View 1 (cartoon, rainbow, N blue to C red):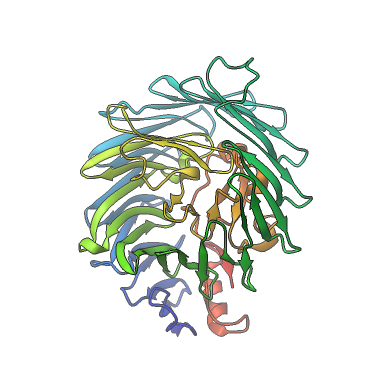
View 2 (tube, rainbow, N blue to C red):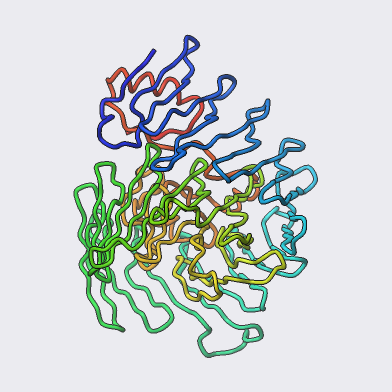
Length: 499
């Protein structure tokens, strides 16, 4: 049987048609760029997938008898995963093998090592199975002190400097301070400091941050910021929104454009303009940057599920500029493992919040290092690859031009501490459709810009990540026969948001 989507001419990277066999399993989706194929029972798995705008335009996956992914390949890119006792035990990439170990009888990761490198990681937990330390090559990388509410009240770095946080009754971060080692009794302000005040539903009303930056904010009944003022330097912005709640004009001179699926397709400020394109799963596969109407950057992106694995330079015949490997899903690490750039491989060092703290080479030497405040504002960025590496706060893609962080479904503004569009899953992700993880990214994280999760819950479960099949398909209305058939084939195997 062959069925056509009612809006197939809208965009070249949504499905044109799909077919099913007599067992009513989805077999193929037809695209302008090729046809992905799916394995059959017991679970629907794509074995080949088209890559928009790239020739050759597909990558392939391999699975074992338990439908677990064992490999992925695309051109020169290849990665493999091995399993033992139901969990990922090995990652193979760039001719090196990484081995994972777990706590006895638990899904919690205890560490991993990569042969031929000085990049070993170890994880330590308290009696409640809460993460308390991450070690790099036997030395403290990040340490946590938690209270009885599972809130992280102190976060220590490898150099002895540390963050201290305070929370209100709703577990929202109200104060932050970062101090050098040995400054515990000092009265003077720390390296970085600030405070946050909220209204009853979680909108900022006032914030103060290092550098005498004070924000005073006014919200409307839709929880949209309509007035943002700073004292030093003195500025006032009046953000505007379209009828779907997408921000049209923001702060610092930026204006935004959106398509019919509420995806950001343009951002403009002065003579700088960015344009974005998306595929059938809502993933951003193309980014263009214009300066004074001249195309200065044109990148294409290749994904494995929702994980970015390659960046291509479209101004240089689609040459691969960066390639990434990610930790296997069952490790519980929804973070990048390594990056290949300019012929060399570098390894990510992340904290317990998924934030990229540094990038190191095989010898353990830092080539990039970052410091963030609890809302993801970049406070410090050093190292030769600090601006090259795109993954920073929450292990998500950072657009240097706009300062926004791309979470697949939405864009996050660290400066405003919130999303610039409504939550696609509406109140299921929280009563405030613009708030970021309940104003507490110290102990919570967001999945794809859709829904918040407790970091302690993720660590205890041992599995959570963007390998999960969460995506949106735009087809006909609720009574449309095509819609019903697609839902029938996909709902049992994927977590789908239907529009």
